[in-house]
Picture 1: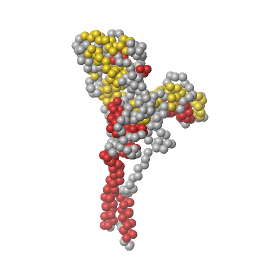
Picture 2 (picture 1 turned 90 degrees about the vertical axis):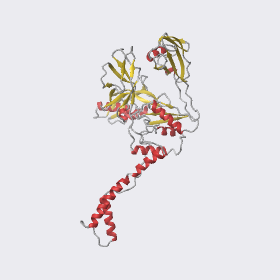
Picture 3 (picture 1 turned 45 degrees about the horizontal axis):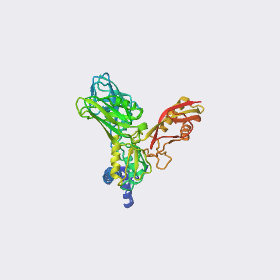
Picture 4 (picture 1 turned 180 degrees about the vertical axis):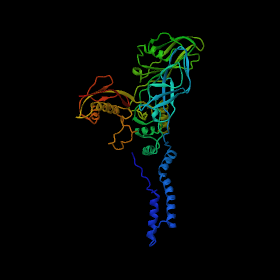
Length: 498
């Protein structure tokens, strides 16, 4: 972290008065400051007024740098923001209900503090169903700040809705940001000025600029990478009754109701061997006259990262509308390519090491596009997370508390594998004290895990140590995590003492 030189301005009125007395003694032979004399009173009064002026002046350098940064360089301080999340709501019966806009829920953080969230807009649970689509109900924190990010289940309903049986978070809340302090802003400003160019040139320049967007805590960039893209297709069902079928790569589903749920459509598609289990994400629907809410099918897993055949449909629809089921390609899938000229792929995460929201990633893409050179392409991606298991047996030092040693060891390994801390340079490295730096590495080094354990107070030595990707066979080798940008998460951490 850079150090800032403050102008040496003395603001103590007693020191200022003493300086004046010494000046008069040096220039007027025999003059001494006598309490009660008019000139002494006058100097003391002027010293107090001057001290107040100097106190204000001493704060000017920081203000000048902030003003310079956001007016001339357009590097704006990060304002506090609210976190958002996505929830699934379940009703007691299938009579059909509306979740009102502004319905309040709470989630508790690790310190036991409850944080209030409210729903965004009315959400309807259709008659005949008992639950919303997974993650359909968006919630926003009432308060701003990073404390509202990284929260998950359980979710407690505050407002009285007697028909609600459960509210469940999908993933974690993201996007809550604390307002940037003067020191943090000046550190960030220095990093930006080091670019010394109106446009990013090298891959690290793109990563540094991505952190100008609120909600982006860390960023890394890969030069020449054109990442894989998952195929996205849509089915627009325009009808008020009847059925339709979907054919993919030579296989056809059974008859599907015109208003089938997204979850049921996913099940039907993945029952086809040409699709396969776990290889789609389905949102949207249901079908209706006019087809206002198309189904959106994203191919993932074994079907992800490549171009897919277009689905076809055979409609047997009735009721209102045009009686059609129309398929369209929303995003064409493609395989990953490397060493592609004028491609720089940027990965961004929040303070908790979690993926930034779609809105924040869109802001990053637009911001970098506005500063890039002509013909540069800048995809914005999420990291790939890999859960890591650790099994270790340690010998406590004489007099060490085995229970405390086990607890501290689990915490140390959890911290080491935390996506929020992975790749942050250690303090021993030059410039490594900035927690927003990111040295991208996809290797869990066996000996580094051992070093973390050996450094725990009370550990005499390691009896045995094994690591593995979650649920895989444990081993004593380095682990290579998959993905273009890889981050670990703590899996099963088992610590025993000998």
